[in-house]
Image (tube, rainbow, N blue to C red):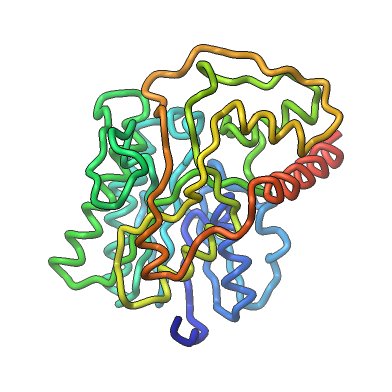
Length: 319
C-alpha cells in the first residue's frame, strides 16, 4: 500500500453508521474531513465526539441539492440502507442514488477529486450464483418493494462508469455486504440490531421464514479498513466486494446473539418472509484479497460482543 499524505476529504452520509466510523479513521490518520449529512438516518450523536476538532467540519445538507465545496477525495455514502428506511420514501431513495450521484460526480469532476461510491451487495438481488463475484450481473426485481434501493445503486454504478469513460473521473466502487457494529441505528429494522435489542430487553427474537436463509456479517472496523484500502490504491477502480465470506443462517445468528447477551430469557419465533428477501448472500472476496490485501479479521463472536456492549450502554443511557 502506498504512503498516505494528508488530504481534504468529503464524506457524504458522514453522520451515519458507516460514515461516522470512516470519519474517525480519516481524522485519526491526519486528513481534513468535511462531513455532510441530511440526518434522515444519520445522527449528530455519531459524530458528536468530533465536533470542535480543528480538522472536522459538519454540514447539514442533502446531496440531491448541489454542493459546492473543495475536496481531493470524496466518499459517497449518502443513502438510507435498511429496508425500513429506504422504503419510507422510495422516490427520495432513488433520487439520492441518481440525482445525488450526478451532483457528486459533477463535484468530483470540477475538483479533480477521486470519488468512492458505497454500492451494495443488493445489486446482486436474489442471486442465482453463490457466492457472488463482481462479474455477476445480478437477479433484481426492478418493480418490487426493494427496487428503489437495489436499482438506484445499480444506476449509481453505471453513472460512475460513464463519468469515468466520458470525462476521465477517477472512481472507486465498493460493494458492501452485511455490516454490523456500534452506532447501528437501534430502530433501523436490520437483523443484527433487531436481535440484539430484542435479547437485551427479554423480547422474542423475530426470525423471518424458516431461518435457513443466509447472510455474511462483517464487523464495521474491517469494512472501513477495506474501504480505505480501495480508495488509496491505484490498481483497480472496482467494483470490489468487501464483506465476510463466512455464511451464517438467521437461526445461527440468533443463537450467537443470545450467547453474546448472556442470560436472556428470549425465545426464537418465526414470522413470514418479506417479499423479495434474498435467500442467500455471501461475497467472493478474491478480488479484495488480490488488489487490497484485505480480508476480515474480527470473528462474529468478538464483533457481537463489542456491539452488544454498545447497545447495552445505549439502553442504560436512554432509560
